[in-house]
Image 1 (cartoon, rainbow, N blue to C red):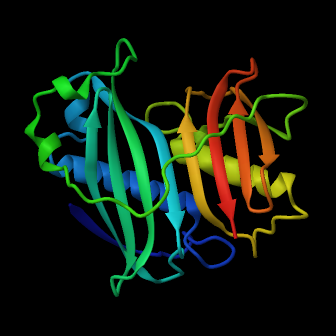
Image 2: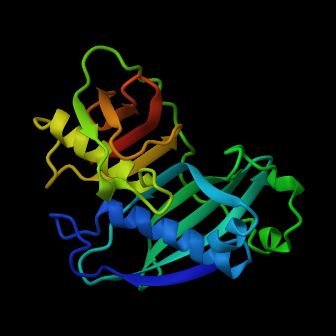
Length: 247
């Protein structure tokens, strides 16, 4: 298990004074990279082998988001390696060791030429196994989002420069921010950004998008607290599916 310490810095909060979901998501991705570097399979190392890590799924469930100025810790470990995927788990806690939340990310290692996944079970890297731990997290696994692109989208988004990451495609966490923002806009009568705070967000990534691409956003209210989001390309190709639960 690897542990990393943080605190909620100025301008990383949302309008309620809590750490924003976007910053928490990026913090977890940063932790994944820092832990991978420790064990010899970080971005730079795999890039030298003409490969790159790609986030396939991300689930974050928070009991409480840390507030402005508050210190918090993220513990992380690899729980499973299976065929083309590996599971990384997280526990987020406050300075007193109380649990704030948990997260689960699923990663694939792709060949940069073919863009196809590499079988992780066939890679001879002792760091993979050194990073593994048998610990589990007490939250439900990923759920299903079967939303289809029917009718007119609730929102249309053009990909701009600030959406892009170092690989030139839309950053994984930007999609999460787009999904949450779209729900507040679509269900303003039921969801207030001041009082209806997300407690759980799931992201499933299906395709890449790039500068200038047009994204269509479709939403569905499954219940008063549960919502589904689908982002597609202009040709209706699914890009990202999100599931969000609110207080």
